[in-house]
Amino acid sequence: MGIYLDNAATSFPKPKEVATAVYDFMVNNGTSSGRGSYKKAMQSDYIVYECRKLIGKLFNFDNPKKVIFTSNVTDSLNIAMRGILKENDHVITSSLEHNAVWRCLKTLERDINIKIDTVECSKDGITNPQDIKKYIKKDTALIVFTQASNVLGTIQPIREIGAIAREHNIPFLVDSAQSAGAMKIDVKEDNIDILAFTGHKSLLGPMGTGGLIINTNIDIKPLKAGGTGGDSAYEYQPDYYPNHLETGTSNVSGIAGLREAIKFLNKEGIENIHNKEKELTKYALEKLETVKDIEIYGPKDCEKMLSVISFNIKDKRPEDVGSILDQKYDIMLRAGLHCAPTAHSVIGTKERGTLRIGLGYFNEKEDIDKLVEALNNL
Image 1: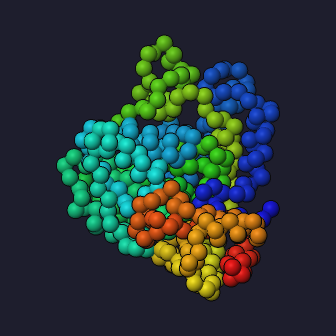
Image 2 (image 1 turned 90 degrees about the vertical axis):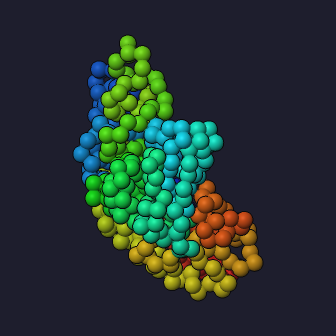
Image 3 (image 1 turned 60 degrees about the vertical axis):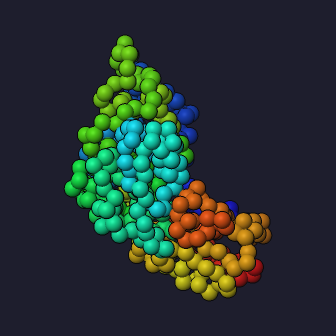
């Protein structure tokens, strides 16, 4: 199978239960949710509802109706940002955002003249939450932060930022693309108003799944309008959740797989998963230091980061190293900007990019040993 080290892009392999659930639904059910009162359609409804409950419980959220399903975290973030921000609004964000946030904000800046302030961070990607206060204005309509950088792995002080947002009555949107499933997230204790998540990374679910946790009463204008399976004579998008932000046929087969993924995470335990990945990260950082001419970016401290490590080899293009690792050693990792040019600006690699390791729950120390051996052979 080779050695897969690109879990920051998408997790692989998935638990067998996930693939089985997708296959079973498509072969033995295949009906739409919310579109019928016959037995199989009711079974689809139950799959979707149970998955909402499981996801809510995972993030300590007790209102399944406000667990919204989307196609991925980019979809989720766009729904939230475009649904909240109005012309001339002001937004505060981090210096480490993925293009899922940054491109959306820049597009809104161009189209409706929003104002954007980015909070400085250290070269290791560490943000001082107190720095946010100096950017808050009367027209600040949103604070949006990634919880963990997809380039440096650095974990941001979400709870403290959320407390500042609450103090100033500003909605707080968190991008948990790298963190959901990899560490404990509690929307109540962490002061998160809106949590955007994706199913296909550390939640170990299928591609094409994601969602929002709406832990606030703020009005979010729907990005889309269409059929919801109910109130069909009403000419506008319903104002109640989840139909307010969900429209069209749901990806029930994907949600069936995501449901089993959440059950797998619950069985293994998020804390156990986090501890294993933290141990792998510590081991990888130690072993990588033995590679000649390597430069490792980020905090290089497994207590301050998730299992994402970016590095370069002196005088070698990351794309060339990545290609050799793939073709000669069957080791798969990512080379480039990782859709996060702002983070690369922080570490001075925007023109060059980096190689990125994304460790996952199914990796072992032997995978790291083989990577390090291959890098030394270069």
